[in-house]
Length: 265
Length: 322
Image: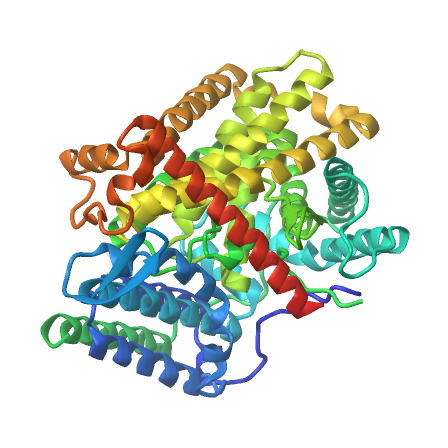
């Protein structure tokens, strides 16, 4: 095992971990939906959403900063929205000179940019919390109950199972290439661009064949163990009273946040 | 050996102009419309795949989804510390067929969003459309158009298809961001198309080399496609999508105001951004005057500037990690 696949699940026995996975999926989607619905510049509502997230993190015994530390992955995409600062009409705040052009940052543009980044940042944290508090197989089971087609759920489950195996294969291929092509740090890579691309393509082709043939063996093994074409699960999910209460509490809090966002800002 | 899981850092990712859209960047309306389209198409794909294939295909498609994820980690140095790598949509559609390829790409995008927060949940519909459906339509459609030809011709078609499928995904992403009011058209279209024109070349080279390798070692895999995939429909669909891309891309980058007006007339933009004249006056290069040549030159300058910045960023990133 060289490329250990890092499962984001944190094995803790908390109130949030014990909730029905369907409740957690629906609550996460509602939270992200609520962020999308909040108007630009509703700072108090955004702050309340973050508070809700921190409460959920504390109930999951993950600590208030757990999701925050992992939330910077979506940050580079924020650059795609930077231009909006200069594009919306409004009171000009400051100017930036780029060559012959002068860019004016407007207050409306700045508000819109900050709102976009906040929405994205809160939504990413909700998704991080979901997978930290729910086992992936339970998540798949929940998706099945939420009417996602069986075939798609089965493909994702198989993919999850073989992620480790195939990233290991890639690690071996990359190590083999590394071992055979010495490179000096700071020097340009050897060969022509076309040659290097072909080597990478051959590796992808090799990986494709290894995966293809592996899937044949997987299927034979499934048949050998008595696979009849249907997938079963041992842990049946039942909605209990506390699951309904959790869902109602989440929906109520989000409704309140929407009201605050629209009335106060 | 230090090994990081996930796609290698590309300059596009650094500039935030890659294709996995996170939540928050699309307006609710656009996100939901994209989800609706994606659900409808995935529904057809599930039905078609279940009709055409037996239960043996379930582990095949699952392992192939893991393959696409793993293959995105194979990179090759391009220049100045940047590296090319595979996105895999065209390769999946060509080797597995369009419907199965679509499902496999949807699974990859779903796992990337759920496990690695690479792309949002509400934005997942748009991501599936851009990286799963469009790649299957253009990638498979153009490749299928050369069925029965010599291997060289088919590989060339696969290369063009791979490049175009990346460009189509980039253009669709740019249009969705623009319609959401996240970024003005004059900026996002040249930036996305400029960077992905380069990324697409890497995609095309790896796809062609991988297919050539498979054709040499297991020619049976590329030869046997279920007839139920409906070859002619995909060829026509791929041709129409390609034509739309070839017409829309120059229009969007050379005449964004025109496209903006059309979108307003059709009611697509409710709170659309006004054309940002403050940024680049009329989006023309000052000394060339207001001619079509000037707008195209402005687009090219934008693409070149983005490319240079990307190379510089890649170099800086490598120096920091080295």
